[in-house]
Image (cartoon, rainbow, N blue to C red; front, side, top):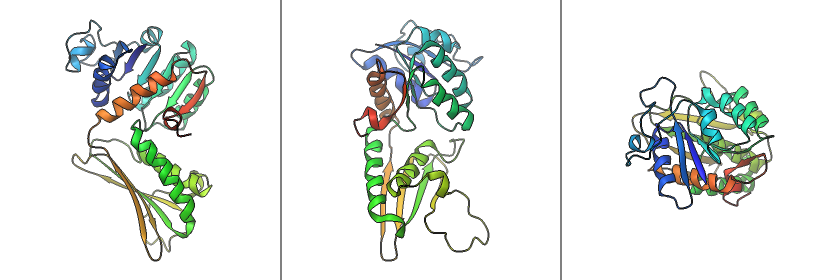
Length: 266
């Protein structure tokens, strides 16, 4: 199975290169970097801390898709629309780990899924996805008599908020209550806001230093508070989950899939 990496020079991208090379049955087909960036032309393996693999970092995503059975995309949000157009054109499967994109890119993902198998993967950790199932069940049992908040923590360099992982937690809370997140989400509080409206799902953001990525679902009742927390301590877990998703999606018919489906949780 030939796996290509979009964004191979990023923190997770380099880990993905190492994971693919180390995984039996997988073959690294190449990696892309930012057009005009310093990594273009550098050996994909060397820039990930490995021995040379004989593949140079490229700025041609179309060529890499043509050479791959599946792409793992951990690049930047502005490239998502182009990458989804290429997936639809080539039929190449994609594990999309990129987050922080807007409505236009989401629409491109949905359209591409008519012609290619796309795993939309805001968080590729197996245990995080198991936890989403637990959060959804807790939310459904407690109901909206408990005020729900999602606390997101990340390092200062994360350029957008809320993160895709945070939104996944909030979606799980909403799903447990049988509501649409867009109808109940509350992201900004400032000034005299009055009493908390019933049924809203609040999101609070913490950014600073090198805080390891973490999420906390808080269900606050009159007599008790129930909290479910997740924190990653090593981004290598995302590379392992993404490669597992890549192996799972190859050969699947065109559609949009989730990590819950990858791990048999849907």
